[in-house]
Length: 400
Length: 233
Ligand SMILES: Nc1ncnc2c1ncn2[C@@H]1O[C@H](COP(=O)(O)OP(=O)(O)OP(=O)(O)O)[C@@H](O)[C@H]1O
Ligand SMILES: [Mg+2]
Image (cartoon, rainbow over all chains, first blue to last red):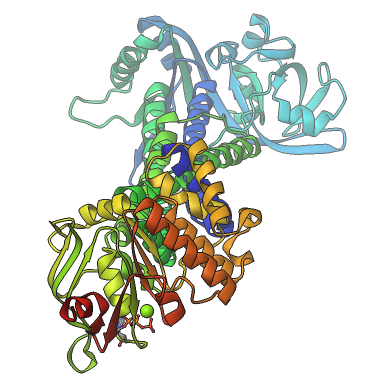
């Protein structure tokens, strides 16, 4: 009986191919939309998280000034002694890189490029987990004497040197000649838009003497020895710097200690909310698809009222008719659901590639989408069919 | 024993001004094994009566007993079971499934009765032969002539060997040669298998095959040869 019913259903689907495809289309699009949105959302979250951790592991960033309602307020810059104090007095600190930054133009031959120059020490590469692709880092002597040497990022190499070897060449940074001694590994463009490879790194001493002309430190990078210690290190730095900057207990500090782990959490929860929101939109599209299915099912059942009458007259019971429509709706929904999954996976795989996001499949959402669409198809196929199956056979037969 | 017993059956269509009394207080008793012809002018209520007998429609009032079972109080499902177990119906307008082959149309009643495929095929072959359509089994309804469709409809009604065969103008679209063949077939089913037959017809020739003729007029039974015999000894 069930085999016969399935054959019957298949035949009906085949006879009304266009209508069947339209019915399934609602499900296909709904399921595919949910899969694409959730997959891309998951990929974006993973990408942002990995971008943030690519800034450096267990990284803590100390900056002067406080984020206020109208942007960042200026604060007194740090001094080199602040950085040294952090290294010496705070437990669990693996490395400290006091850094000063300035926007400059670098020139080599006929090429010029606007970028920023960072004055710091060798610790910078360690704290930011940045390996050298070629050349070497600063020597102790170069750091102490403030020689005009620099390590450049991949973008600078590309823009100034093209296919030439940059190591040993001398570039001009704001008219100061500077020997290139090292090339950093590329890190790529982060999701938040900044090109991490667009920088020149020079010893802090060199920077202060030749470029900025003052002793200000605009940022201190600190790496904690272990992930569990970041919060403690963060708090200790806060306490230490409050003391050193003479801030009273009831006063707000004029600097900020940012823990990248916490930022990662915030970003994760933000993109999580965003994904949930988009999923809600996708669910709406699934519901709209469901209404389409409902319409077509209603039309299809109404159109076949006469057929239902004939079946009832020659020996079908109400449940035979219901079973037939149920199997038909189920087959359609299932086919639509599977096609929707394949289509959704294909599109999200393709978009992930195009947008350079990792492809992360959210299996529960896929299942929910399929179950929901099947449910819609079955419910909306079931009720009109039941109405028809309960008609007096003669009324069904007379139905035009 | 009375197979069918209609008492005070009335069927009213529509309401108010558009009201039509299709059957007006009908009494009718049909015994097991009878072959009854129903005649009467168009619109006299023959099809209405057949639909009620076939449990396809319910009367507005009155009592219908089938094998001593009151049909009018049965629910949908019980009536469907009654149709499945005892009845065969040939519609005035054939009512074959569209886009479905003659053979599939024939086998469908057997599918609902849970007959295995092999037996279905054999019985379909058999009834196709009875109605002279051996070579048309694989044609869809649309590919058959009116007369051929009518014969498929008859074959579909008899394939289940019903207790009661209800046929609404089964020969309406056939030439006299075919009509005679079909009538012989029905007479044989009645004789050999004891199938009770109630058949609507407009043609006196066809009515001759029946042992009893009931004539309808304006929703009444104008004449019933069985009663006439009883009255005139
Ligand atoms: N569904 C309906 N709605 C309203 N009136 C109907 C309906 N069916 C039949 N009638 C009316 O009931 C009356 C009897 O109709 P019925 O179909 O029983 O006639 P009939 O004797 O079978 O005629 P014919 O020989 O033309 O088939 C007719 O007057 C018809 O108009
Ligand atoms: Mg009629």
